Length: 257
Ligand SMILES: [Zn+2]
Image (cartoon, rainbow, N blue to C red; front, side, top):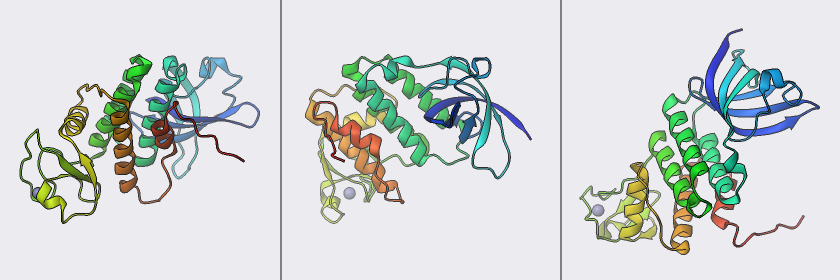
């Protein structure tokens, strides 16, 4: 039974039976892994102070080929990213980043995605609550770039003519990005994308910071991102963390029952 040691980050974790935890990890060297940590809630020797959401560390995984659930035999914590759980804005952004990777990454995803994901989580952890959404949006678009389905933003996705910075375009999920005014008429309906919004998407996709001024513009960005991601999903399951993120804390919706 090969023992794999790799850097890993916890994207999902829940208690199982009396003392175990089942965990979904993104790893640097072994893609996404589902593992069971037997005795995780009682063995401080093997698992330190606990394996919590968004924590990074070196995972020791006993891998059996063909098994869905591998065994986590050790986790040497390097960063707990406690600020992500201490604030609702940061938590919502980090949860959406996790969901993005869990839904889009291949099981054998390469290390680039792990690097971009941990960078994005660190940036959200360091952001003030007021900036957490913009920083989270930047991280999400970088993940989209690494996953290989970045939208076309600097030229028309249909006729490929370069688009000047000050031109308002239509963003069509189906055609894969910005469409010039004349092509937009013949394409499936999209969202109007003003020049500032396109500048934000270009900055975020390139790994640069961009501060959105107005809350309603930020909400429009969250909606655009969710719709773009949903268009690329084939299973039809909703992106729950993105829905929660978009709804925000200002208007909590309580579902009955
Ligand atoms: Zn065009």
